Length: 345
Length: 269
Image (tube, rainbow over all chains, first blue to last red; front, side):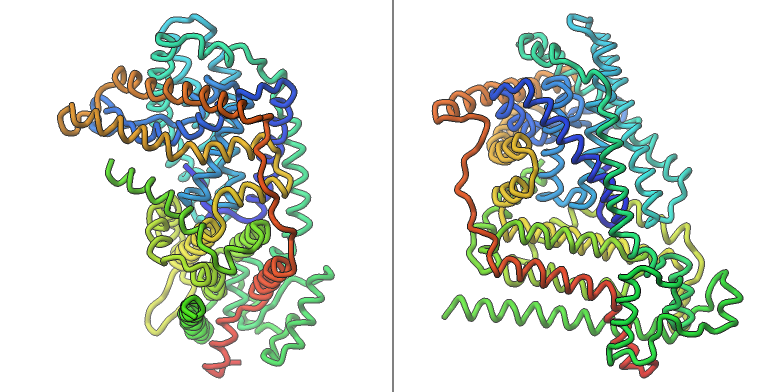
């Protein structure tokens, strides 16, 4: 359920970056307070383990498909919430950079969706409560499955909300919810069972390994204050920097209207950036009568429901688009050629 | 399994490419990282029905790939691997959003198909730029850039360690899986108990390895910090790269270049 850059808006991406960054800062601070150098290589190597464990599968009875370890819960059980959150964040960073799974802007969303709910909600509030030290195997399985399911359900819900607020996908809230939650219920059940199987093996073979995490202090209160502070800060930033994009370039219906009318009729530009851009655009020789305050065809203005599709503009867009694409390809070949001759000489 | 190990083998390939020495490789990692972030933010800031205005943005990933001397195939194969989620969510747009938005000859194109194409374009642009960034920079330089941009040290240090041990552990896991598949029937992956023991053993080996790494690091004076030679100062070329590209992205955001060209050519302007 990695969120992709292609599906989010800069505002949502920015806000979630703020929230995740503040959680990373909070976790680092907590770890620094009772720093044990030993934990750092352990975190790094366990992060690599999460990748490696994805190569090992088991058959899910009765379905013919196979499942594997997800990562969030096992890291929280082995390392405690703060260290697990950091480790998971770095796993996701590597996934974003190397496997293009998720994206750079969506990284904040992904760290929050997969890390926050597993490490700061499901583990301390469910797993630790349901499965204290020395509890039975059944309890371990139950706790592990319930916490994995809850963590993933919350994460999936968060994906739905982020997609909804970004307004790139046309999926309605309810349909997307119905699509995401059941899939993640199944994934949660499988992940919970896989986690419990591994933890049970470790409990039998090397019980002392699980001791340190079981005794790490839980977050006294959920780091909600940090999350909210991060969210607010990022929201303000996004509002201040990105809102002019939104106001000068209305999307959806307004965009379509604007194209159909053939002029860039915009809500009255009031900000300095808008005025500056308007002047800049007016001055360019290429666009003599491309006016921001140009008169819109009154017929178009009166019927703002759906625009009469304008073949002319679409055609210009396609011609211009193809030509630009050709330019880019020629540019690429020229650069390649230039670089090769430079290397040879 | 073969496909997974090939996939992971590719992981090292990007780092190998980062070892080359082109003018692009020699730039400060911070400049490349920030320029790519600006690029992605600008690309995703377009309205959901935008297609034409996104096309000029191909110039950035194409520039990185060409000047950085990266095989196009390498980026393409990764693009395909990462496709499913964007495709899965995007494909609903044509089904739901059927309102006609554009006419071309006798065809009417619905808003859904346009926004779907827009999602796919964004996907290709954002993902290829990130892959190209890693291929011309390398993972460790990106980490040191993160550190110098203010990311907490603990996070960066374990990120670097994770990346280093990724290869070792993947190798170990693939050996284990290979050994097991030689001793079992085809398609028998085993039940949950076997899975637990199998993955658990890998975990125990991993933790023992972490212990050994820690001892070895302590012998060499580890104090929670990986010492790195400091990269050169942020030079004129880096500033030029960052500012030049950012300015171009903003200009392309403000002016719909393909539409302007099209209008000039068709004489509708």
